[in-house]
Length: 436
Image (cartoon, helix red, strand yellow):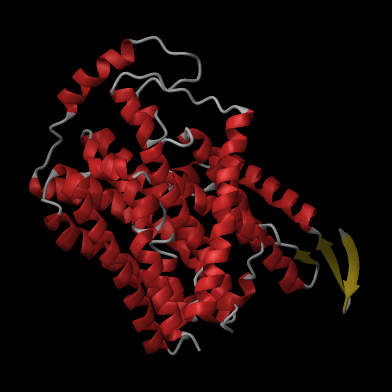
């Protein structure tokens, strides 16, 4: 870390370690804000967004007033990003996908079409408004269906193609989508439930099925209800009466860390090979994520390593938190000044399309049932923001109107992973087609 003066402006240069430390401190500060400010927790604003975005706003003020300039070394941002997407692939078991049945396939197809239409909307408005179409892609499926993770991953790729402020646009759009996804999901579900007079038929069945689990003795720290289980696999174990342990041992952590690192290396090599061989720009995390999917399902078949989903989730949560915190705290918000009005128009159109799509297309195709309503609330959450938004939307609705087991199985699987099997190649195609 060093301190200098540039053209009369004090400049603080943070090295790699100092930048990492700042990112982690902002992550903790973001958690503090979310826990203390009800509005942030109500809209499921992630801690790194709260802390990192607040810091970037502070940097905007300091930069505009010429009071201070902070330069940061984000060399570690990419490794954390690669690690997070590798963990997403490692939890994608086809065994769980099969349990969703035909309804999962319908929901998956609807999510895939949604990501395509989001790109079409973004690019179309960009052409009308005279913007670079690549910015339209970033305000499409990249930031809407993809959320902050894809925004932070694709933004630098597009910026490297000569599109000024691309990363800031993508991250700002993702933040807008995150808030919007938390706002529209509940009202959509309430409208459909009241219009079609729907109700949950699972309440009595769930009470009968979960009572033995609630009565059994558990160890301290174990989940005591299905709702408290943090993964789909844990929910299954709870439903079958199995003990679920969330203890993470050092050796287990190292084994899973090694698997994540292996996926990262393969992903980097694969992305480089695709670009050299076919001339297609593929984000470095894509190869690692798909290799992780292959690795997970081969392991399910041959039982080479005993995978511990809570450990994988822990690694993913830590990496995502630091990655997003680092990405958001380095945003150059002053680059968005000329795009404010066009962004609001494009993103407003995305929200309006989401509402119409859920009510008139997704809900009928999913069967016009109570489960369909809950899945629509989830789709609004992860289709505009992120999977935690989807879970928060569904939880809020089911707490008032009754449970939906199918929705809580299908939506996380699609929102957290399956949609990327279509959305990422779709995004890559759009970016390469409109590249300069």
